[in-house]
Length: 202
Length: 202
Image (cartoon, rainbow over all chains, first blue to last red; front, side):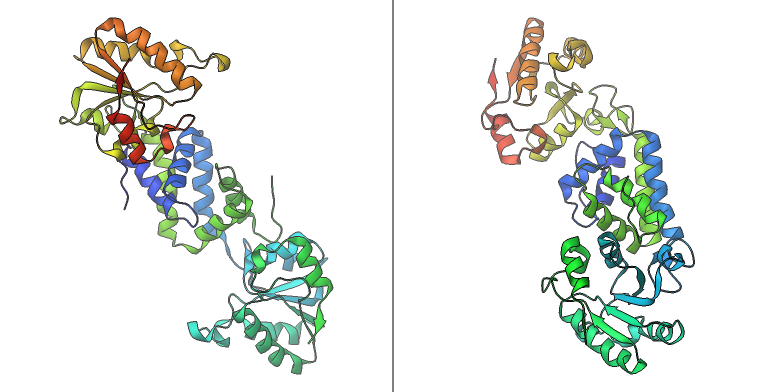
């Protein structure tokens, strides 16, 4: 633990807490703490409440496993979305990128991970069973697999094809435009648009 | 306000709060929010408490204007520090850098700003009166002016020399080694050591 001399205990505590966050070094942590010190009491209160409320209210959508404040997420609850198309992603943050692109009108299914035998992640650790159930019961006609284009993502995609094809559903993999090895979460919207436009049946 | 589609309201709120912080862009804010979501409830609670406690407990030291949890800061309350030497700085965060260097054993005096006629900051806006009082009453023999080496800092230093010289105290300005235009807060320890070693009477 770093204890900065010349700083009161309460400042040091906050610097330490900020320093635990990803991408926040010691100097950034100090800068953030000084920012908190300078902002109004109301602003501090709001930040603290947001931090606390997040852990209390956020859960997984009962249908697609996206993050949600209610039983079903905004997307699953939206009557206008096309229920016959499912886009399968690894994690909730991937949905943000695809929603930003704005061209996908179907629903999602979040696997909450990707197959990784080396890390001991098998099919039973992912939300594949509920995906199969949804396809069987919800009249899904098309599944677009949008897992990352790294080893784990490709492995997961291949596994899914094997599982989903026998169900009589059309299975697509996004492709054209996605740079290999890149993380879907940080893809730009144009690339993502290309990837959705150039989906190919597999 | 940015509202990310596909994210629950409580996540969006926290992303917005983090996004208000200095040096935190939209993607960093999202990353931090996901970090908070993944960490334990206890960790979230501790962060929220640190944020709230900071505003409640931190005030200015009654003697030197450093940040403090009590009436006097750790440095002023330390009996081992040399009370005959004062180092004058612009802001509390400057003290951290000098303390890290570890070679200065005197006390500090924080001006809480620097002279800046263009911004309407005059001598009466800085803690100069209390500095003069301390020098008169606390048997101070040496004053080391460690304001920044930019226009405002140099102006302040020159003003202080004019005010302090008649009091019969030795006045120094740190100098050798500090790169011109740099901010004292982010100086490295070796440069700061040079600056303290090469102080020259003015």
